[in-house]
Amino acid sequence: MCSSQANASLLNIIRQADNFPNFHTAYPERHPINGKRIEPIGVVPAQLMNEIKGEKGLQMFSIVKKLSEKEKAEKRKIDEKRREKKAASDDIEEASSDLKDVSVDDKEKGKSKGKKKEDYKIVILAIFFSDEVNARGVEGRFEVMARLVEGWRDQKKFGYALKKWTGEKISVYASAYSAIWQKDKELKAAARKPFGNVVLEIERSAAPIFGFTVPNVHLIAHQGEGGDVRIWVQKHVDIDKDGQSREKFNTSVTLSGAVPAGKTPFEAAVTAAHEDAGWTEDFTKAHMKNTGMVSLFQIAKWGGLVPGTYVYDLRLPSEDSIGYQVPKSSDESTTFQSLSISEVFAALNKNEFRPTSAAVMVDFLIRHGHITPENEPNYAKIIRRLHRRTGIAGPGH
Image (tube, rainbow, N blue to C red):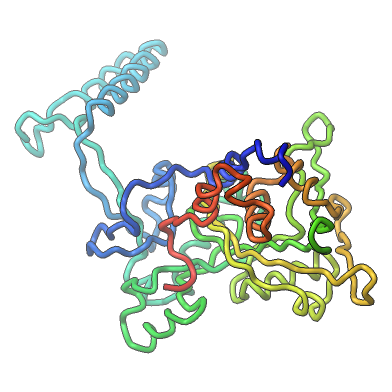
């Protein structure tokens, strides 16, 4: 990294990709029912509860919790606005009824030492599949989730996610220590094999709604040595509502894609290389290698959670080699370009890379010695953020 680049820390770029607030509790959380430290299969926002409530095959574990003084004050403001709205619409009778609902003591249940209903709230700690559903295994859980998300799609709910419906299923994983794997030794052993702890499958576009660990792959193709290294990136034609081409977030790494159910990350990367870059299976397998993972927790702009990705490098043969093949786009909206290291840094600093691709590119630059503790003041923080512990179950145990 040149001196001008050294002054521009890349930490903020990582923060854009890893923008979910840090947890301040131990990992994994204790299961609310059995007390064991078992990672959940996903994390959902509180507002999703109303969409799931009453869904056949799903159950909820909840507790009654006393409101804090801050929560009481916020609730009073909401109730006051509700009453004002009712009064403004001249619905005096209904407004009066609402006032009684939120202020009277719970006489029927209690006579509970003068406590009011408004002092408490119901907190849902966990959503889980019923025993009947679990007895049917992966297929039973898939049917429950398919019915739920297909209903949302038909009702045009969660439109930003579900309008990208793919018809492609991805695997969702449960902790290998979950009770569903403990029924017999054979099942327990199977869950501890690579990618053996699949608990269900779900439509790919719906997975972020539930905060599931969605297996993805990102591949960076590069060529050359030392100062002559060049990295192949994708440039996307992104048009805004005014018909202008956007420059921000219009660049990504060479290739990326989801890992379909039943496929391994390596197989998914080989498929993406063929479909998006025109590389044959033999060529990709000969030159591609896995280089680890980037683990993030990214909140999509519509609220979904997107954990990290498997990372691959593909080193191209020298340009004068008979086996040299540049990536060829199969889509008119994208083109491939090779950038020098300094051009990559410039694109990162101008926010041209999409957030996850930016994080994967920073990981590449670290692994290849272009970002070091000597030229990046937040080196240690960046390393930690690129390999974040999400607390969500994934492949393995």
